[in-house]
Length: 220
Image 1 (cartoon, rainbow, N blue to C red):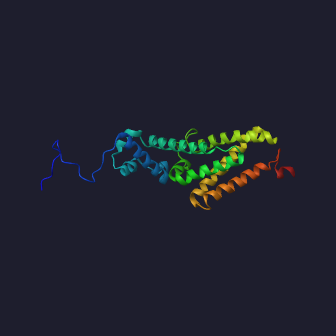
Image 2: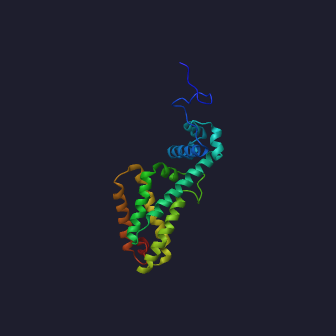
Image 3: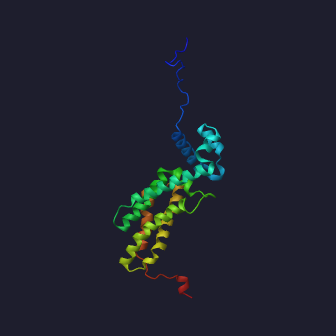
């Protein structure tokens, strides 16, 4: 049977043929593939060839959009940094410091659970990591928010507010390192992990010594 022609004389597209993407759609596809590969293998072990192969395009298409592997990686990391920071910032709505600690811990664990590939990209080491575009930069931003909360709380309790920065870095670092551990083991449950983190942090903060000193130095 002769194949019917369309009005312009061309044969209709066959079912199952690959649909052409717009430039914006192709860019998003490449970002998603890059994110997946960087999470699986890290920056060094990922190649433009692999990205192109998974997208079923030629290498020049990837270069056209990002200029190379470094450009693609920078876009992926920038998106994850903003996504994680937005998630944590939006979660901090409570008025009481205890609840704020809970919200911050849960926001990070929620991100790890929902965006596992993104978190793996952020915590992997890379020669491209800079002070303004990596997991450390996110933690520093969150620590600055916690610092303001602790500073006000320290004033009401008679502690030196200048030390709020030190404590904020310690608290955020504790949650972040626990999050990296939980990423691999996924137990106990997320809410249980958050509850124990807050238990350690809050009960420690609520029984602070005004001027702590090392026991080993006291004995000398």
